[in-house]
Length: 82
Length: 82
DNA sequence: CGCCTATTTTCACATACGTCGAAGTAGTTT
DNA sequence: AAACTACTTCGACGTATGTGAAAATAGGCG
Image (cartoon, rainbow over all chains, first blue to last red; front, side):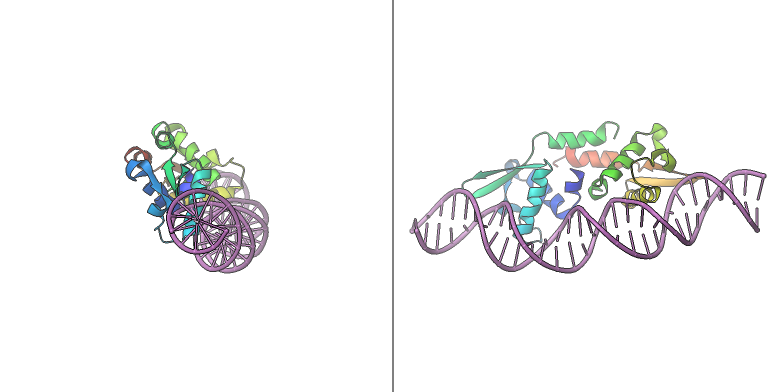
């Protein structure tokens, strides 16, 4: 997970999904991060593979949201004994 | 910081320092992570540059400890709004 | 000072990784 | 079915990064 969050683009993508209204964001909502759209898709895949995000297609758009329990799990990594 | 923790060796090194007695560890205490000693030193430098660890030489040995407030800072990243 | 141990730096190299353009897949609309 | 939008995969390329061997620095001790 830390490896996935280690890339600046991915950290921004994750952060945008996490802070988006209703906790979910369409790719089109978050793809303005300074790289091409295929690259955004590549990074989102990495975040998915790392278990940080989940994706769901609803009609035309694909929605991403933070995997439930991931935030708590990460927070716990640094709260209890490191 | 996430980038620095993204490497498995570095995550182990950081974890070992964080969980060591008295909160500090000599390089010799933690250098058995499966790579050569120069590589350990290289990774510790990365962790230092990322602000995660601090080092202090006391006589023959160099002691590493987690930078104060770093754990809280990281925990906060995932507690408040993601 | 000269030698020994502990740690860091330098150098060279192989592999991993981010990036883009182009092609491919999925779904909607006409 | 054809055309259009939204997104993903493929292929290729340059750079970043992890790695070890060897040399260099730092400190302790005879």
